[in-house]
Length: 159
Image (cartoon, rainbow, N blue to C red; front, side):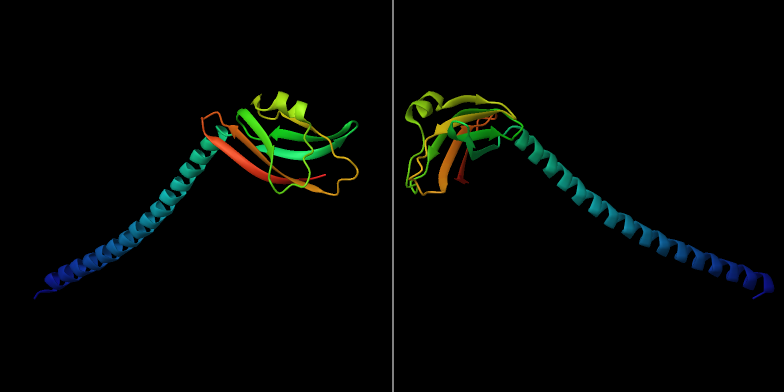
């Protein structure tokens, strides 16, 4: 082998070594990009699930109830804290209550309550004599959401 052939072979071997290093680095970068893409795909799935949840929540009302003492006595205040309108709202007491504080004429006029928009409230009168020792009432509220589904909540409200 001549001197030129040896130099030519060494240059070829050096080129192969540089190519191998470049290929190794390229594969490592490719593997990292694949991991980043997997994380990005998981994040995108979570974002889509969050958007779906927000869309579902936007079509549902969230009703809350509390027992408030006013100038003329007690009243159950029902508030729509959701983003959608609630329709046909039914309010009732559960079986475990010792005393029924609802005023019959008021509940007959306001049940079912036709429409309660987002942020709106309505109330039902409650008559609680001083002799009643019950401090909390178990109540249920049932309503129809804008998307046609029905919801029901059970709450315990204190006076």
